[in-house]
Length: 267
DNA sequence: CAATGATCCTGTCCGC
DNA sequence: TGCGGACAGGATCATT
Image (tube, rainbow, N blue to C red; front, top):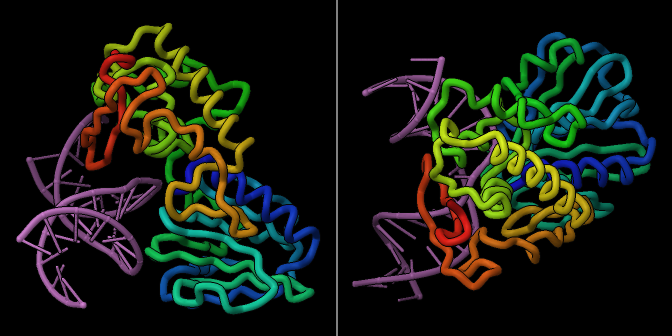
């Protein structure tokens, strides 16, 4: 499930792979995957990618003449570079063709992923309310204080809320809370300032380490070259039986999602 | 307004 | 062997 580190990995792969070639075609192979804003600047193609950006879990590719692609992989979306057709043709939802025949396949088993073509001026209309970028220098415990204000939800659920902080998903929140020694069931109303600071530090650490490892592949995630990431080898609680201290990991449901935590290490 | 639940969708896994 | 059901979960929408 692509979260911030996986999206960042894909973005870097795209930049490296596209390497200055203009986008000359975008094909939709599944109804609803590609969405066109009515006010696109014409002509759309061919267009160089002028900027490669990420906001939370969204990839934003700025195109010449003021258009942009807003891409969300959701759960099973993959962007894979290929020079030949074949591979897993069953789940190809869209094709991005660059000159020189380089193709990026948008493969998405569960079809929740989207590619939105829009004028840059209207990008915000396609993004939900997103909190701060956790890897920005300005991200601090004060951001969490602000995001948690007036809430009583369990810290696990609150950190999954993209309007509080952008880019975290189920796997990394479990890992962050383990490292911070905080139970996922703790109400955000009960967190001390020092706990908020711990959470912030561990968010930074975990995301930075995961990006360095090219993301986590627990099921579908792949890099642009179809290779897995490596951070799954460093998970401490997610889908684990025992924590690094040897204690039994507990699995509970919170807001419909599995939380993995160590009842001994996390209070 | 906060919080929860259903929804979208398909592949995988488990029990019978 | 196959079938039904639970599960995976990011984001949105509807409901409490």
